[in-house]
Structure formats: structure tokens, C-alpha cells
Image 1 (cartoon, rainbow, N blue to C red):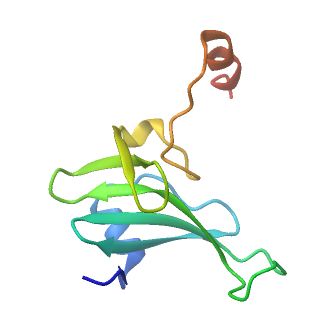
Image 2: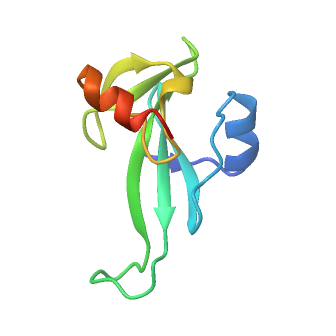
Image 3: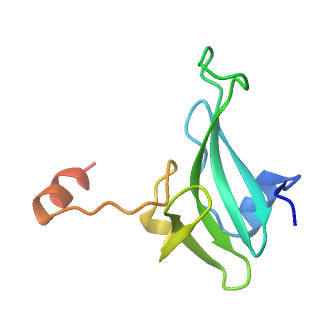
Length: 108
């Protein structure tokens, strides 16, 4: 099956319990490929050195069968399961912080 963009992205994200709002200047885009749904952050920052004018970055993956989110390894491969509450609006990748870093960065 060819990669396809889901039509009503916002409704789909609400239906699966996606808790994040897009950061200022960004929007989310979802694509279904095989059994997984990839979630992308999309920005249009003005002039950039590519023809499309938009910048896409993988946020993470969602598996509709297991109802689990996965951190990305890269834009086509999913990694470990993650709790949606431990993710940020920018990425599902998990930070590997030592206790001092955790105390410093979680105090916000």
C-alpha cells in the first residue's frame, strides 16, 4: 500500500487520544503506511533551501491495533513503546537523563 495522508488529521489525533497541541508555527500531519500511522510535525518557516517550502520531522508512530505510541528510530522505523504523557509536542523520543539532569530539566 502506498503511503497516504489521512484526510482529517485533527479528528484522527483526537480519536486516538493524542494529548499535544502543535507548537506555535507548526501543525501535525498523519500518514498511514501498512499497519502503523506515522505522526509528523510540519513547519513552514519561510525561506529554506528546499523546493517544498515546508519542513517535516517525524514525531513518532501509533499502532491502531495495540493502541500504543512508539518513539521513532528514524522516519521509517519505530522504536520502543512510550507513554504519551512522557512525550513532548515536538517528539516521542525519550530523553536519557541522569538524576541531576532530570531534576534540572523537569523543574519547569
